[in-house]
Length: 492
Image (cartoon, rainbow, N blue to C red; front, side):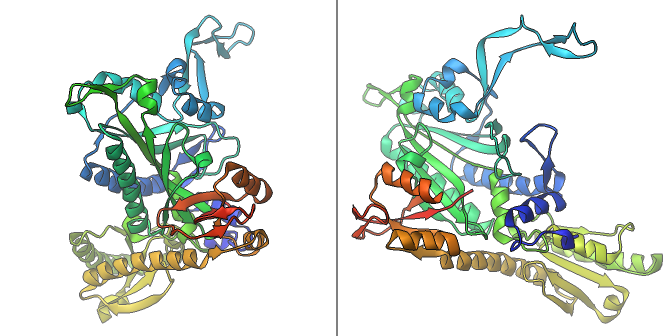
């Protein structure tokens, strides 16, 4: 199966597209720009969702659900937000179809069924949520309001790629209201840290925590926090964002509260989200020319057991051993699958599980049973070893932890080796052309310089790292004074 994959060196983009389809993660649909997430791909997303949902609830958030449609008048209430998303909006203008009198058997939009007000299919939910919050918040006793929504959104993308950029995608969006500016900023920082913890500890992807520049901020935000990751082709990917919205949406939707002192004031707000784009990050960070490589913490099946047998008697013998092994593994919290399909030979099963990134494979045959051994195969480094079957469950548990750490360290080494400091624009262009990755460079802080660099190189400022040290220097492009470095890169 993996032999049919284009190699990363030959064509990284083609490799990615082929892998998503061949590993049975997703496929293009009959709807232009939209994808079908297949069961195996959705199982990975469900594991992501479950862990994030747990983390949100542990930090005091509750889930709710808001409408898919946003009246245009509400959508345009916060001008910056409306302007930022206007070009990507799908709009509902009619509410009924009818038989087409000129084309029997066909339908047309009923010209008499025009909506009095158009409905925007949500590209993000701030407008409908803040209009709702106006009725929920009257007093300081109603604050903080900590709400998350798991939903789908639509942004009318012209150039799409499975998981990375589709017209419709799945995500979560948190929307919170606070008494003070300080509380809201703390919330935005907290959620950026939650995202960082999840991406690093579950996805095994190292990230840089930072702030977006003014031109890269979320439309309607006073500040955007982000986590940036680096893919194997040297391009950056924004893995999550958390926005401090100030009082912009509270003022747009007149959301006020009575303080302890009896004064009326607007609430302070945040919003934050990650999406199925994380699936793209997972694939591009760890996978190889043989297929998907999944970190154990997110693999639907952490272990697969493949029986090697001739005839029904040997299969029964192997199955008895496998059943006991699965019981031991599951008692330690390991997810395991027994692949006893009789439609595929063992070699074909090995190839499929390798392509789908199962972290550990155990092969058991009649000879193994006689010897008290099993064959263990790791997906991350493709090594195999024959080990005693006694105590195998604990050994597997330890190996899964080792694989998780190994994947993170490998990605961290790659990321750190692809952060390059430059002092001149010639060096900047040379790194982009020949090495890729993050470029650490001084920037004069102006949008003009940022735009010019983007125009000339297609590289953008991915973030101003939160741990960036004060450092006197000169802007890599304009030569003007600068006090710290920022990270540039080409990005998805």
